[in-house]
Amino acid sequence: MVNYAFIKGDEVFGVITFDDPTPELLEQFKIYHEADEIVLITNIYISAGDLYIDGKFSPPKPYPSWILDEEIYRWIPPVAYPADGLVYVWSEETLSWVE
Image (cartoon, rainbow, N blue to C red; front, top):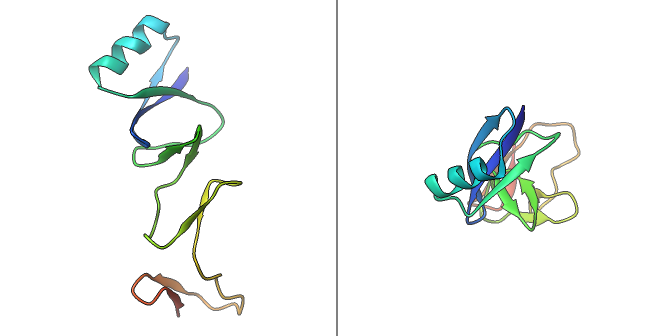
């Protein structure tokens, strides 16, 4: 069984598992679901809402101020998480970590 991500723009809008799809079947699904691309998924977990940027998958952008690290395809806050052992949450309003 193999998994394929259905992409529209740069967003995954669905994931489908096939036993052994033919190229014709994949093309029919692409047309029916109005996908821009269908991408084979291997060795990673992908779900609807994830992004597909420059041939790589990443989780959705958590906050408008966060920046994509293109080496690891993960979103990085503009301010590093404090290393004092306390628990913080990100405040987009103040662009800082709040205890």
